[in-house]
Image 1 (tube, one colour):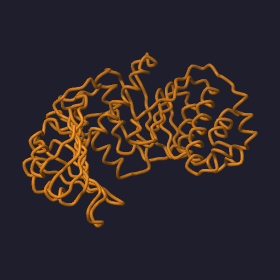
Image 2 (tube, helix red, strand yellow):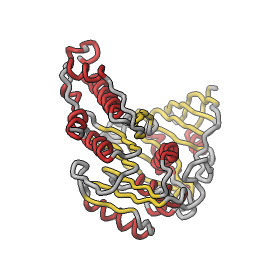
Image 3 (cartoon, one colour):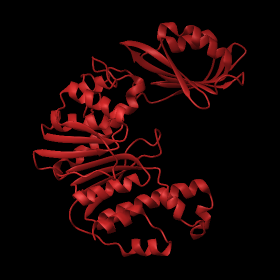
Image 4 (spheres, one colour):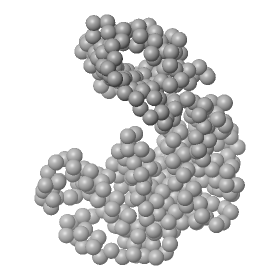
Length: 381
């Protein structure tokens, strides 16, 4: 449907429909010195519906939040600085051209399936509407159990990760579960695992988070102590240096860079961990070894070579794990619209080794020397 609105009508359209507003994008700046794009998103600040103005510059994004009732002047300024505006509500989209004090374009009906209301409760393992101590402490949730718009992607990621763990819970028949999280970082998912096993499943769980950033680990340990997570601890160290004296049930390594992933997989095999969850990242090793002449149509382009090498690296890892007695699945961890690095290796130790002559023939033919192959050979000598 074609529409022709005044600038004041566009302002009213956005400001008077806070319940159904999803996001807006201003683009094509009149002045080259302005940011190339301004994105407006709905957020909840201290229970007050607000709009986050995100200015996208070349090297950074600057965000400022304003309550809906204080946004009019900011909107006027943007409407005078940009030539295009895209508006999305739960039931309608507007594609507008801004010129001569008017906005012309079209409006399209869309299925109202997604609400941005922060009071909407979804069927998550960690539900909205109920304050969860570690999510509140980490700033993902407020005291009333609401999740701010700016935190929703992380909130979904935490729940998605727990869904993957829930699938393998039947593998743990024992009451005591021991977990190591390599490269835990700020430990959102480490805390989530502890809460899930201890508070929801009522398991006797011991979790150790390993990372190289001492200051971050100190903050994580303080938070664990404050929350009373008595069997959650954090240690400084590398994956290569880790040596435990107990059997491990679950090894987690999310976005361990390049061959750090291989060391995490080696540790899993050495300890015969029952389950491992690994999200590889920055697979450079095979990229540096593979000869573009072996597949000239694909590998002559750097971008394709990089992606092919990443997929080949994880295919090799999955096959080597099968040879070590694991049943392997490759899963989509995060929505690819958030990050292209969204592959997760989930493996369960079954003890049945599946030897792949094709793998070793390929490694020999193309003279590839993946770190995991070397580590596992050394581990089993």
